[in-house]
Length: 432
Image 1 (tube, rainbow, N blue to C red):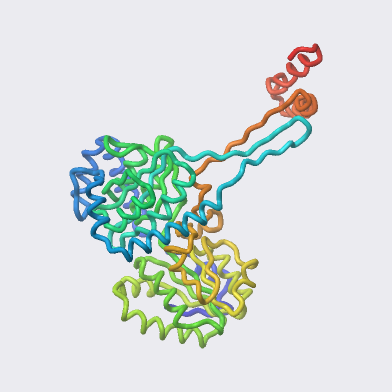
Image 2: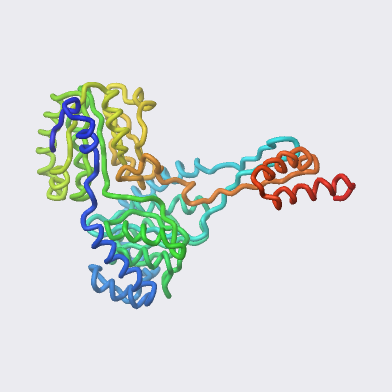
């Protein structure tokens, strides 16, 4: 990890340090994804099977995972993993159920009632990565809020072969439509629909560069589907002072680095001594990891930033806007009001990022690549749409009408004014 002393950098250098690397071969990826989407839109399941032969480890003729396949997957799993998944489901469900919003009903002036209501997005598609690290945790994070919101149709796609853990988690979360197809072709299938895979209104879930590009392309097409959020490689920033446990910090940095070679790992600390100790711990712990080669590549482009104060550390974090922000300081909660622009914050020595990834109850689907400045962590609201209702009584139109007439007149919109004027004249004549 490269070590930098913050105060020795110019403002331009500081900004450059916090700039994420450009995603590789964006133009080439975009062209490949456009061709995939066109093929799926044009030839449906036939194209999905052809693309499966090209890209999947275990291509399938039957795209939908049968109940018998899920039964067999569940039977192969031990009770320990089943119990762990069920415990995580309980915590995630508890946290997201608490996000249900009541109807907002306000009388803004006498006789004028305004309401804010929510309704579920009718059809949602969930993408769960497979590959070298199948993610049953993502099944839980995406499907539980869909169930609580009341989404009528839930479709889940995951690369073939679908892992036993993913299939068990899907069943435990009530997902009944699971398709063993991955990559950009899965996103296209859910966005536009095929003979087997229903079209959805919104797509959720992380993925590689091709999946991310496909989500972006279908979201820009009115015939396609909305998406949860823009995304890039996974990332963590750790703020640590001299009180931090070096082994804990190193473990947190490595847990992020093992996601992929393009994962972003940043340590911001006020203590050079701690930075040295963490470096030693990383070297020692890295040798024991099964994904050490992947983690080592990520660490090769990662940063240690030495700063003078925790206020400066907070400012650096706010500028970077990390997906995950871990605070290991003597009084971590004291910094909370100074921290902005993070997808999810983990306070204190006993709160590793891993708990949020799996089972604390918060959602691990988070904005990356600096989007935490404007985007939020996934929650129940993302599976709903808000709409407003208004209702006026006679008293209401009499009181509000002249205000509307005057503003419509100022804007030169005569029909708007007339819609009110007709009603007020009718009331003056004693009509209703």
